Length: 171
Image (cartoon, rainbow, N blue to C red):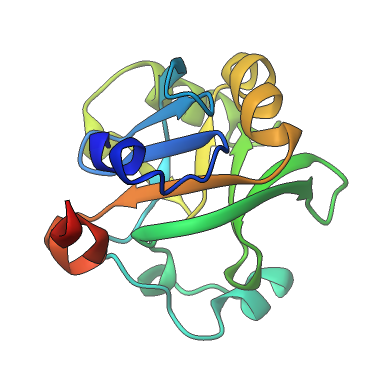
């Protein structure tokens, strides 16, 4: 995202780029230096949109399979906690879209294996959030993005960059 730095779009804040096609998260310090990168799990449904009302339904666990997209766009992110008290980076709080660590539970082993191996299509299993390994979350995401406000750019997979990031036309 060279254009983000050229235009000063992050406004001196750290930022992240989610490459959905590669299922990868890149985290940058405010000065543009790469803090780290990792494979990531993404929404199980392909699409660049947010389904209306999905944030409310996520609170009750009632998110349909066709609603589990990782939306594309530019987001003003902030650190916080989920309903279980776990640290997350809220990418879009209203739609319950966050970057978070791989959580313990019945799917931990299978999801951990998907994160470590396979191609991008194997990493489409979340409800829309960007899920990364625990160590990467703790060492990079929480320290860099979790320290305060940040910007998250989620690259599109069904639309063009120009359709999603109008600022590209200005560079």
